[in-house]
Amino acid sequence: MNVFDFALKMEEDSKAFYEKLAAETSEPELKSIFSMLAAAEEEHSRAIKAMKKNVTPGSADSKLLENTKNVFQDLLDRKNVLTILKSDPDGYRHAIKFSMAGIMLYEDMAKREAAPATAKILLMLAEEERKHLEIMENIYDFVEAPKDFLAWGEFSNIKEL
Image 1 (cartoon, rainbow, N blue to C red):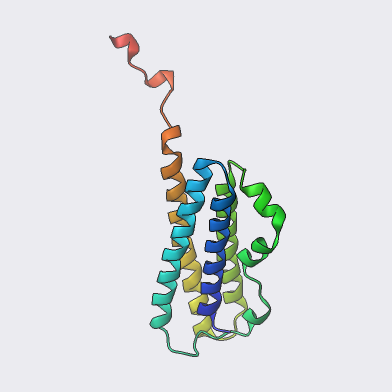
Image 2: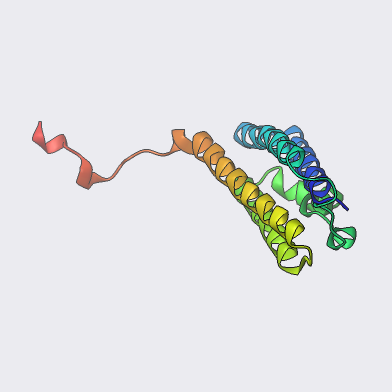
């Protein structure tokens, strides 16, 4: 199986997962976060497609992937995860765990891959996932920003007036 095809399938599944969460949640903040995460997955798919164009055909094939399930396919199949996350105010934290699991999956496969060229591609995909994780963290910070404010008395200048 081609590692890029595997990665693209994982991105499609993660986008579908976040879209499903966004559609099913009644919390506006969670809806916003999950919608942004779905859009970020679409961007990530484009980046992987661009990487795939620059690689020699056949150099990205791996037998390890034939029996490997991607992180999000399992989540899409489990109903209880959707039920829990669609109302969980910390649903984003679960998304971070899923993304980190993807990074570990690629790194683990790279260690076990016999073909050096394919192992290098798997490590490139892990690095791409790290960049994507940073984007996800920025999305969360953006959505949460209105809740953050400085309210410590030691920084107040009220007594100076």
